[in-house]
Length: 309
Length: 309
Image (cartoon, rainbow over all chains, first blue to last red):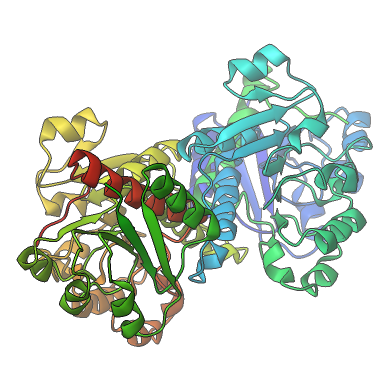
């Protein structure tokens, strides 16, 4: 049966991605309705009429938005993070929620490595730096981004270690990484990259006790969620260890304060705004994957990418 | 027989590298004489007395310096480029000349990849960029740096092509790269990295006809010698192709003029001064390799790293 898909993007996809999404919808006999670069919530509420599924990016999918879509069965976040969807509200209304796992993963991993090299080579200032080869990169969470990091790390001749509470020792070792049984073990490595979701358990969990364990020229990389790092502890650590660098695509709330420290802008090296997923390839991947997941759901009851509260 | 080795470095090695060099000399029963951070040529001339071999970095090994070293048999440039040695003067005096091939290669390759990602991701400014995965990197010269680039490129999921007049099709394909029979073929790729020496044949050889063949978002990378790129043609190309980037660790002579162009500092993305080889690991590698080559020469007549006019 024909369906109507709403593409609701406050910040529009690139044209090639929209064409790809449109192509997937057309092939399934679906109608694609576009609401791009909108400014007011009311525009979104108005656009919900007759919509069976919606594709969003960082757009807020609130209870109000859901209520405006009487036929709404499915919300797909084209991307990884989905804290912009009110999940309990969706459950109450029997609306399925999904993200597009893996679509942005290589984009994020490439950004992280670029920033690691820029830091290791003193932001191209002509002075002597250090090499990544032979060092260890340890990841907290061995999902899609971390697997891409692992592939690139092998190219750089780095060692790789992983902690992931949802994977067994055999699964981690089978992928060719060193198994860490505890979070603590990650922090023996010079590079630690965070890929855990922000939950009650992980919030503020990356604290002074962990980071202060790290060796010389340590680098903590956060392309995931800022809240998992305890910001007061981060500041304390930066004051004590002059050779420590925090690389983040998700700036800490106390950024101005940290940047005011000696050599602060280099030691707390952040992107101007979150951009790990921002590549034309990732846009294409995530948008088209979202459209494919919608067709798979309605035509074949597939639940790839489903997320729950 | 015991020998005296002079370590003559206007810009000193890091302490760990000097310790390593000293260790190699001591193990062979040689004496290491150090002249570090010197300011005047006269200091170097005075230090030459009784020296059998010398290790230099960017220091000038002129005929005058050679004449000051009555016992001098060997000059080793700890690093790749050796145009600071007067090679014909060395031949006339029966002095052997060497560099340390490969010691800096990984440092240069890592720098190149860091700069490629920084460029692809708009210098972390928060805007959407592109990924390296799936693109092709083509190298002019498939020596030590290019082989390190190849390994890292595989990690990034890139394709790789090489032209090298000193290697056969079988050798290049055997290493897992696509064979280019002519220089022209390299320029079908989005990324071209130059690793040829500067000779009468290669000087100014990277010209408008070649660079203008490159596809969308093309990037020309030069970590070798600035003179191989025709600078007038580079300027013309930058004027015509707004999506072209020149990444260089060896700034062009007309840099100020190029940087004055629209978006010039990003489109002509250069290190503050040549730093590809400047890592603590490369310093260690090159210095210790130089000391080992000196011992190998005197004790076993080895000529590893020999360079000639």
